[in-house]
Amino acid sequence: MNDRQRPAVESPVVVEAGVVRLEGHLALPAGATGIVLFAHGSGSSRHSPRNQFVAERLRSAGLGTLLIDLLTGAEEEVDLRTRHLRFDIGLLADRLVGAIDWLAAAAPTAGLSVGLFGASTGGGAALAAAARQPGKVAAVVSRGGRPDLAGEALAAVHCPTLLVVGGNDDVVIELNRNSLERLGAPVKALVIVPGAGHLFEERGKVEEVARLAADWFARHLGAAASATYAP
Image (cartoon, rainbow, N blue to C red):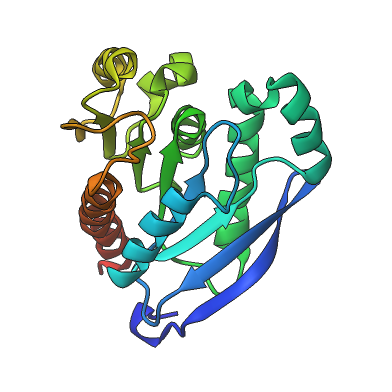
């Protein structure tokens, strides 16, 4: 399907990821040039207000978005007590890989370049998933992420990767600096947003994240699409 002919879509979806079915929300502006799959952070969900804000800005830039819950309802109940599943990067990456495959097969999104936006522990999961799907992920953005949790997978990430960290998030800044050096991506960057904490709750800070993410994805998902359709 030519992207100019791609119709607008907005609906709840159920994403089959391996043996589980994950609830999500798919939104495509008319003529979408790519789609961004969100990997929420520890203890969060597809209803995260910060991720919802970023998703809205991405759609304004002509990109589709898919926000999903990476855990099932039963797993969420367990995680509220134990807090261990939110740090199970292998499990979360498995779910993202399943969602990437779902996007490639679903009629509204088939053929679109895919980006991953990860927050907190979701940043590590997004990078681990990108390492497993080298030909299917065109770009990654991590917000206040824990890329270090991707471990050895960092060296196998070859798509353009942007790490965004709050200037007041001292420990996470160092983790991101170290991870940047280990990333295999030839195009990579670390942006530190002054005055922002781990959650970017300060005035105007999540807006800056949204601007950075929209610029990164518009540039690199567009480039991937051009390469795909080049004669």
